[in-house]
Length: 151
Image (cartoon, rainbow, N blue to C red; front, side, top):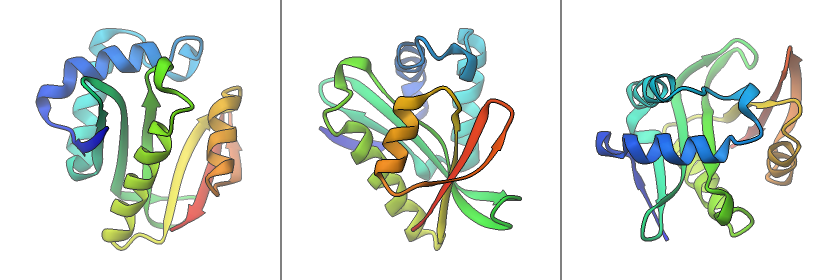
């Protein structure tokens, strides 16, 4: 497996993997192809150097770390992990962990001291994943849990 920066040519793969990864968690996701494509463009525009894809013979996961984010919760610029998802058949095989490690490394390279993210309150597998990787719950807002960790 390799992890590389996303290019604009990865949009269709992003839409496909995103749709599959959020099956059963649609309340936390964009659901139309148009919305997902616009989300890809937004992520790419926020911080393209922090937008990664994990590939075997095809894309199997994506992460988007935005080091230009000013968080009102941490009252500082942070490495905001806007997105991290992996194809269902690649879960539990270290792909998400490798994407997270690469995103954290990028955040440190950009001088960020904190990584923050939001996870759906009922997305227990994701919450357990982030807790396992050193994140702590720092707040709640509606259907979302705020999590953060020091880098």
